[in-house]
Length: 110
Image 1 (spheres, one colour):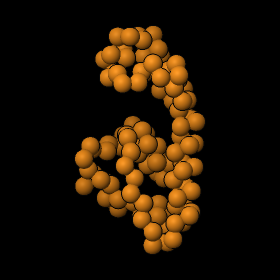
Image 2 (cartoon, rainbow, N blue to C red):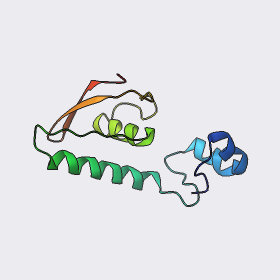
Image 3 (cartoon, rainbow, N blue to C red):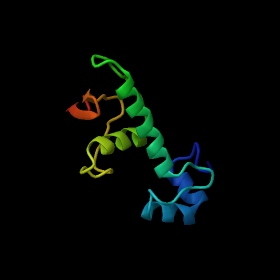
Image 4 (cartoon, one colour):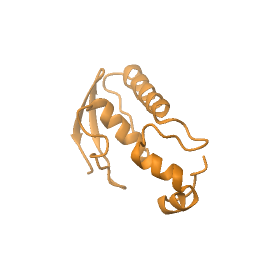
């Protein structure tokens, strides 16, 4: 994408019009060359659901991911929680327990 490798200030300086539109509707505005958010969301959920349904009940998944993936998954499992309100601290881990398709948060940012 045109935003790849740039921090927020650099994106804002280089693409001020798209930046402003994206700030107002980040789930609906797609920067040039980027994957639309809803496609990203479907891809992430499909992948984690595949692993949850494929692993044995005593299996373990270690997921190292960026904030967008983590928030997308948390929101998928807890749809009543605001997407922006969940903070995942860099260097910390969170623990979820899955029973089939039901996922329970055990620890956040340990």
